[in-house]
Length: 215
Image (cartoon, rainbow, N blue to C red; front, side):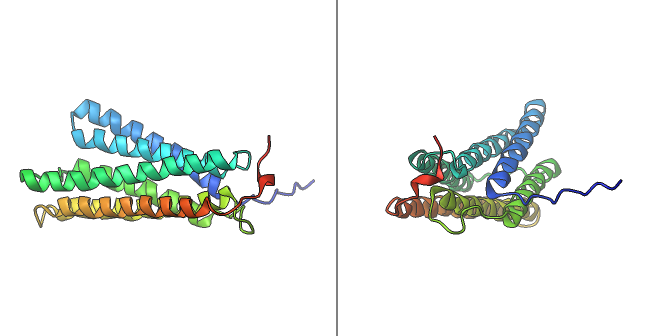
């Protein structure tokens, strides 16, 4: 007797966001543990970054859920966008602060490995996001907007993750370059946050289908 394999159900952008929450949370826990044991501030900082990303992705996942009311979904989207904006501001501040004090990012192999691990996680999230099937192609609901938020977030994180890793590696040959990488990354992340907030304001002017959420 042969058993037919059930066809694989394509995952949605909400699934990709929830995968991102788990991946970032696990990486944050690992980086916090290593930072606590080694006393390396860089790991603790990265753990905070990954935790913020997990929170932002969780907000996006909730916003995409059809059971979420449109008003609450937009609040969640705004919260996630503000996390991006704050992260961008911290990155810019960190780079400028290093330049003013004449210091630089720690470019040890351990730090570089942590940066590459973070970039690899962000790449995995971006790949899942790219392969995800949209559940809101034919409407202008809060879910459709949140899916775009997810794509912007995932692609931005992937790009800035590898750029930061490249900056740390380049620090060995061009002292101070990682500081400018921080500023560039902060600008990209902050720009993504501003772009997302602008789209949310535009979406607020578009009526949503009230049948897309359940009591």
